[in-house]
Image 1 (cartoon, one colour):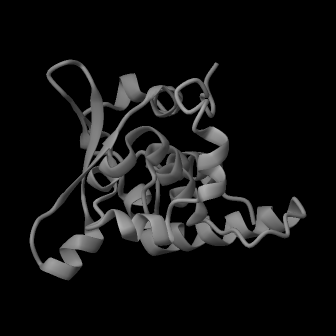
Image 2 (spheres, helix red, strand yellow):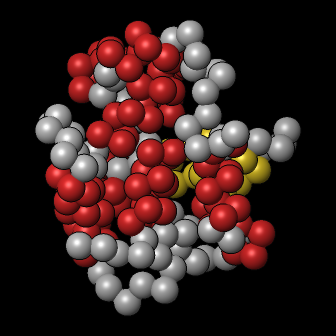
Length: 176
C-alpha cells in the first residue's frame, strides 16, 4: 500500500488545506510572488467553478513550513515550470493518485492503531482550524467558503482551537 508520493502528498494537503484534486493538480507555475515578496499558490477553485460555471480563483499563502517542503521538492530547479509538484513523473490518471492518497492515509492510520474517525480530508480540516486561529472570520477568504458558519459547522475543530489559540503564531508544524 506504499506509493513514493504519499509523504509529499500528505504534507502538501496539510500545509495547503487543498482538496485531493487541488493538491494533485498543483504545478510549480501556480506559484506567484506578491509585490512585497510574499509567495502564494493561485489555483482554480474546482468546486466553485462546477457550481457556478465561472472562472474562480483560490489563493493559498506559502508559509515557512510549506516553503521548506517546496525547497525539498526542488523549488529552485522547478519554479515556473509546468511540472506537477506531486509525482511529476506520473504515468497514471489523476483520479488514481487521488484515490491512492485517500486509501493510503486510511491504511497507515489503521497501521498506527488510530481508532479515531479520521480520514484524508481531515488534513484540510486541520489546516483550516489552524488558519482560523490566526485569521478568524477572514478564513473564508482563503478557504473560498461563502459563509463563516459553513466553516464552523463542517471544518473548524473547536478542540484544536482551544489548544492552539495561545501558540498559533509560535508553533511550526515541520520547521524548527
